[in-house]
Amino acid sequence: MAEEKKKRVINRLKTMYPLRALVDGTYEQAVAASKAGKPVAWCMVNWWGGDAVLRAMDVAAIYPEDFGAVCAAFGTAPSYLAYSDSDGFPTYMCGYARNCLGYAARIAADNLPAPIEQITIVTLSGGMEASRFTFYRSDLERGAALRGSPEEILANGTIEAGYPGFLGSDVTVPGRYPRFGLSVSPQTRQHIGGPEQFVLYQIWLAFRFSADLGRGLSVTGIVGRDLYNNFDRIKLQSDSVLPHVRSDIKNYLQQGASNIVRLQADYMFKPATDLYARVSAGIFEEMFGGISTEVLYRPF
Image 1: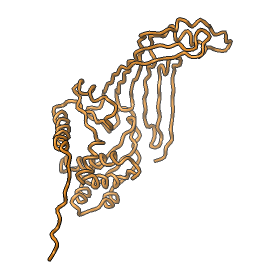
Image 2 (image 1 turned 90 degrees about the vertical axis):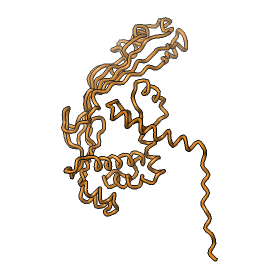
Image 3 (image 1 turned 135 degrees about the vertical axis):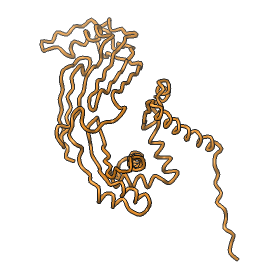
Image 4 (image 1 turned 90 degrees about the horizontal axis):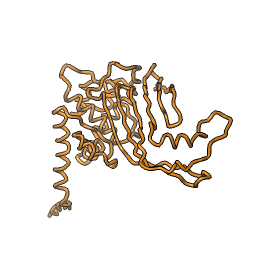
């Protein structure tokens, strides 16, 4: 007589049931906000404490890292990871990021108009193209229906370096620019080892702002507002015969109690396929300002 198959007992916490509804509601709110034309912030982690700030600004927050865990729980992550692997993204890359890249490919295939057969996914870093992967929509759909494989997608597709470009290149991100940011935080500044007193200090507020004006073009800055300091006790003047910079710390601390800590404009672009360039100008820190350039050669 065959033994009766035992049923598997699953012990679930009662908190799981309201949590499921909470997760669903989070994604539904983000979708509704996007359809209504409101901004949606894609955040990578939720330990930074900015969720309350985003809510106050009426910005919906969605967390693709959490989405990666949801995909893993429902068993859909392997297919998205396979799409990402076939796109040429390395397996040592963050699994959450690979899951979201594969998901993006699948969403594009499901929602683009029917006549579009070739799909190109362009990865951007700092407004510059990092890579391009072009694949056939039919290959992706056959793979999703288990009538094809990631190897076929990769064999028929092309992976290439990102294209060179300046402002106004052919790849645009609707709704991405301009984008502005503002934050306020308390800060301290110390002056240690002076003959007047071993430790002098200041308590001040840092007003940070940023503006992404276009692909690769940004302006960032910090403005300081003094709350309290005892730097007036510094009496020693520098008697150095060399050009004064750091030796004028007394003047910087006393005259710049409230000051522009940093104000700079950056432009990053790709002048050629394997070249990455940056041009910066402004006040880089409290005691230095000017123009800075950098060129990086990185073969694809």
